[in-house]
Structures are given as structure tokens and as C-alpha cells.
Image (tube, rainbow, N blue to C red; front, side, top):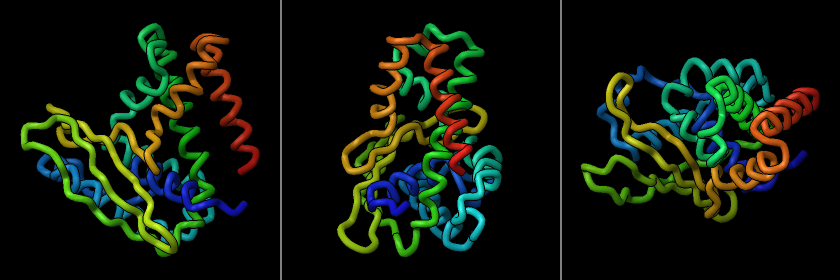
Length: 214
């Protein structure tokens, strides 16, 4: 399947957020500015994809291993999942919340892994960061440049205190559309029709179907 430019950029954004790159020790992230973090991750992911034939071929085991070991500590994935689920998250049991996070992560990784082979000559251009030193949440704006027009790609990050302190990604925007909000409308329909367990079942079945395709 030939993917359009928007799909390639969404894939790149998902991998920067969730996937295949070499990430330096977490201690380094504590003092790193949010735009510097995104720039480094973006360069790392592009270089890694271009150099790793297994990732470019959609090797799910390799992608998922890198997600779990190196990337997830730098993403507030609980917040990302909770925001996508919406008000129903507060009614979900801890076990349901864990299953939602697991299935949502699998959905994102499997959805975009197939697009990695399309990454070729893209580069990342950073836009000036509009934030005060005391801000705890920021938007880092970038453009993905390659053949044709540049594509907007923005990230929402939050400053987290305590152990593992530093900036963490919790949402991303491609061409003016925020990923979490897109899934929230889809998930709301499932929750309204079948409840939280119905949403979990739907995600599970979708992931199984995607696995068979892969």
C-alpha cells in the first residue's frame, strides 16, 4: 500500500512518541529544554529508521521492544490514553485502565509500523518555542520537510516532577489535527454503545486483525 504524505508524517510522529530510536539515559532529560528534546528525538528517529532495515520492513517485535525499553519512560502514556478515552476513564477500574493503555499502545504501534518504510529523505525544522521558563505545559512546533510542501507536526509536552523528572510527550498534532482528540471521538462512540469493556474488546479485535495483516 502506498501511503500519502500525511500518513507518513503521522507515522513519524507516532514513532518519535512511541517507537524506534536510540534514546540516551533518562537523567539527561531532566534538564533538557522541551524543544531540544523534540529536536534530538526527531533526528534520532529519522537516522534510526533510515539505518535499520528491520524497522523499515515493519518488524513488530523490534519496534515494540524499543517502545517498551527506551521510549515509554519518556511519554505520559497514561495521560494520553485517559485523554483519548475521555470521561469514561474515571469510571474504569485499574485493570480496565491497564488494558486500555496496553491495547491503545498496540493499536498505535501496529497502525504506523507499516508506514516506516516510506520514510526516506525527510528532515525536521524547528519553530521558535513560545513558552515562559515557569511553564509546566508547552507546545513544540515543527515542520517535516521532504519532497513537496512542508507538513506541520506539533507536540504537547508536560513538565513532570520527582523521579524521572523532565518533559514528557502526551499528544501530537499533524496538519492541525490532534491525535488524542481524533481517537476520543471514536472511543466515545464505542463507550456509549458498549461501555468500557466494549471499547477494550473492540481494540483487542482490531489489534488481532492488524496482527494477521502484518
